[in-house]
Structures are given as structure tokens and as C-alpha cells.
Length: 173
Image 1: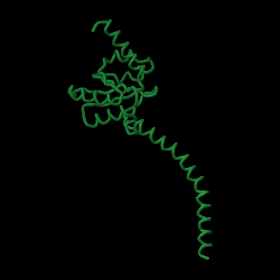
Image 2: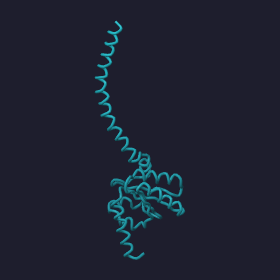
Image 3: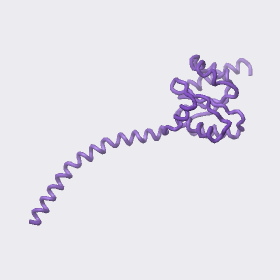
Image 4: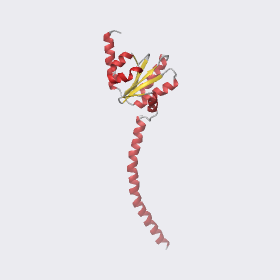
């Protein structure tokens, strides 16, 4: 790879990292291409992608303070899973893939401006998806007015029940 190609790849990676919500660094040494292809397919469903990167180019593409923190994580064969939408969904996919394939090892991640370790990636993967969280939030928002309407409806219903009981007493007497 000549100097112009390296500069072009570095600029391309810089754009990818800038657009990303977060990314995860993994070691994939020994995995067949077919498994990496299936991982790429699964990640694409979640709005993420998996790239094999040259370590030096990736470190140059990162911001200096980020590159300094992640310098030790970029060694040997490195793959970067970049998540553009739902970080938790990407973490779920990667964690499930790592659990199913012993040769795939997560090294670290970078989410919301900070480096996270493998344990934090696992915790992130256990979070509900964005859609589930939005559904729960919507349910909470709907519960408040529904409860208010029920309380307000209970007052007239109570009066109707009292009047009905008085009417039945007078009819029986």
C-alpha cells in the first residue's frame, strides 16, 4: 500500500469514526471468512458494520486522546465494529457472536467519549433495545393520563351507584 492509499484509508476511517455512535475493537484471528461474513450480515441488521483495519491507520484516524487510550488495544489482527444507530444492539450481536465462537474476542469499546472494557460491553449488551425502551417510556406516559381518567370517572360512578341503591331501597320499601 503506497502513501496516497494510506492517506485515503486514514481519511475514510476518520469519517467512519466521526459518524459513529460508538465502536468495538475485536480480535478475530483464526476465524474463517464465512463466519466473519455472517457477523457482518448480522451487524448490518442493527445499523453497524465490521471492518478489518490496519492498526496504525486506525490509530491515526482517531482523535489523539482516544488513540492514546486505545493504543494497547490495537495489536495483531484487529477488527472494528462501528455502530451508527443503536449501540446496545451492536453490542448484543458482538457478544452473542463471541459466545458462539471462541476465536472471536472483544478487546474494548469506545462509547459516548469514553473507553469501555469487555465487562462493560457485556453489560451494554444486556440492555433492552432502543425500541423496547421507547415502548416502555410510551407505556409510562400513557399510564398517567389513564389513571387520572379512572380516578375522575370513579366519582360520578360512585354517585350513580349511591343513587341506584337509594332507588332500590325505596322500591323495596
